[in-house]
Image 1 (tube, one colour):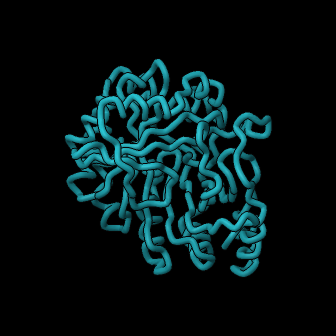
Image 2: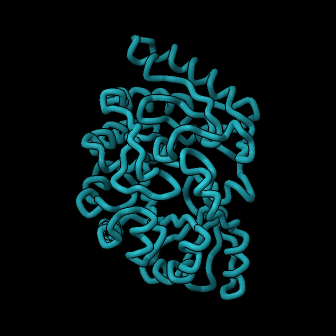
Length: 323
């Protein structure tokens, strides 16, 4: 499955809910109430069928996202269904870790092989300011994931000027201590909080330059389908990554599409083009017909995002697609 620019699509980011138990400032406005109803979400059987069709077209890695995927009651059923699809090489999950103490073991046994965890601050007050959540639950969830043997375990830190950019070195020390991989991410002016996100934007070349004054950074490789540039930090064993959607976009190597909880196929996070697959499922279209719809959509995948263009003024919150 290739788009019109020759990029092979092997990675599906699948949102199972647009709900979340946090309200991160760059993702979900505190007063937002426009969530989809659960009846509009793809049910577990529909998810399994669609992922099987994507797998038949060459998708090998599925990442489950949200919102927060662990707030969905059928989460373990969804993972178990996908785990039965032999064509998939990997099922991973992105989470805020607030519920990982409860679910880490079951997720691993059901077939999730890797976790990405969002952690933007190690200061309880700052963490609450950013997320509205409880830092202690997240740290306990990370501990549970470590106990269950998830490796590599990646932490994602969205770096925001004047909010948490002073915590970069502290986060590095935490990841060294717990043998975790750390990825820094630039804010993106996408969705209902785009203006707020841009107000605190930090180009990660600033963070990289700052770290190079303290550590030797050697290029490294990491397993996964994402766009990060990785470096090994001195002889510590720590690997850090930089994800730079604004300052140094990675569109030329984009290998992913996104499926919303409501069954909309999105071809680019930074543009509003999408195709409904739920309607095809529920009106009884055959697998072959749905395959044709997917292939036609992928052929229209944009060459790149353009965050400075009016077309990127997306009207959905970031939580609707999981980033």
